[in-house]
Image 1 (tube, chains in turn green, red):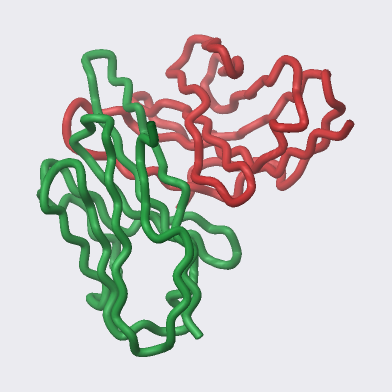
Image 2: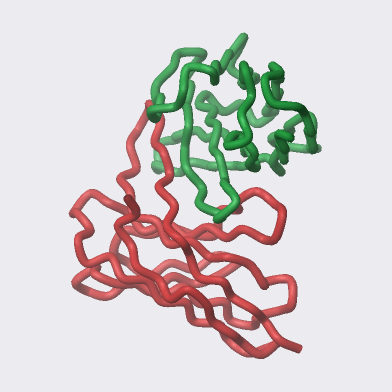
Length: 115
Length: 113
């Protein structure tokens, strides 16, 4: 039933490690996104992919590498994790139809803690 | 940067209408007003959007002023489950491609029993 699902929900790891967060949507949407919500609760876009093509890259360090194997999946790999990477990461997807409706849908988030 | 201004917090009694204001004085002609909310520890949830006409759906009503420089989200009968941070966002709706959402600080609505 879940529309946009992320795994894992919680991730605790040490500085310097490499980790991945996976996202899948079953809505048939053609655009997927990664957003980051920091400790001050500001929610900012990181990346978006449309039909597996990178569309938006918002000045994110190149330690972050998104990968979209197909339209339904957008994974986020993070190398050499730093304390400042601790945040909640949200995956989202959207589509556009003739009425301009989007169906923008967010996942439930992955809480990453770097120690 | 967000193009909207919202009060940081509001309170509402359960069962009463919650009216959440938003100022967007620099809105462009092709930009829509969107409202999302984020319940604690969950992802943002779409509520409603509009261009210039008032809109209503099963969740809320959206009232946009004639000059489009401000709007009000109305939750007609607030419940405790409506306690959340509400975000007002202005952006164009494009056919095809992708569009990012630029979130401001939002309004923390607390519904009290």
